[in-house]
Image 1 (spheres, rainbow, N blue to C red):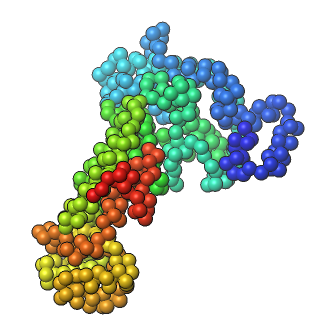
Image 2: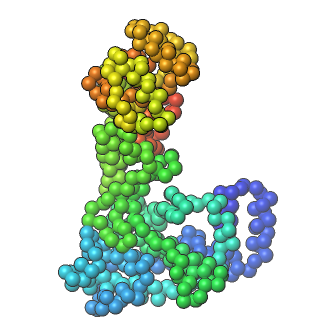
Image 3: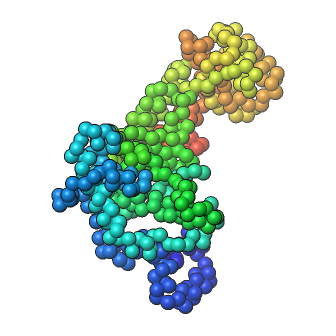
Length: 463
């Protein structure tokens, strides 16, 4: 137990020896207290039958021998977390509806909720001593002041005011698999309930320690808001996607989608790319929800299709896949407005005055040498001369990005001069970056940031 905890921070034999020597001086009861307090993992590891018996009692949905009850009165005795847990156990009754609607329209369902609450209360009483001794200690964790540097094994994502934790370990430990099912879901609900109650207990102790009145110690609270049956994490902070089945005890009739992160839902991408990314995320999550395997080849071929389509489109002078932006008066993009008006406008038509929408083109003009070679290769020498004047005016030694007015290129497409300068591989990477984030969540880390290898290269395709 000591090594499992300390290995996340150090692996120094001398430090471990110091701790072990202290443990050897403890009594067996003291050692058991240190090992088991607030640690269901080690309680279950050394007492599997006890923990499986407790979990089995709490998730048992057999209500055949239960008498009718006053559901409304029973629910009033439960706190919000307990009520949400009972609601989760009765998800089949509450799917697409609310407690109030069930009370009015579904007498049998309302009775089932009441009986489940009765059974829950009885189990809570049955295991009171075990819970009180091991999971509701009367002291705060000694490391609470170092919370920001704690290494957590089950926290998938966290922000300043929230954290998302996984209960996958307990589902697999109890059932032997990770598929969705009645028993699996009930274990997930139970583990979540236990975590939430431990948090409530810790916050109450914190309040008591700072002098809060006893009848107000539960005033400081955190709520369990969302239930995510599947959760896909990417390598980029605050970028994830998931299915959502419940919110604050309300059970959704169909799984909803939660997508976070600008690269997964960025408005600068075209609608076609955003829809394809959304469809891919949905397909991944629902495949896992059904307990089926994902086919890596299918995912990779879908992304390769968009990479090659992006490159082909740009080489044709189309702007279909290019990311959108906007040029506003007095913004740092105003020089690009002048670039179009002074250099390309005389040949391809001038733009309207800002503000206006534009498209972003990444180029290979990364240095002065590349700029000079590009200028020399432009057949229209008058345009090349205007370009040289603009570069001198702004003292530019590179031109890595161009922002072109959407309306001006809508009719004629990308000017050939810009097509020649475009870095099509980098553009393919930038435009399809959402796909790469999605692939990361499945363990397919193939693309590199320098665009030396895209997915279609990996599959052996050619544009």
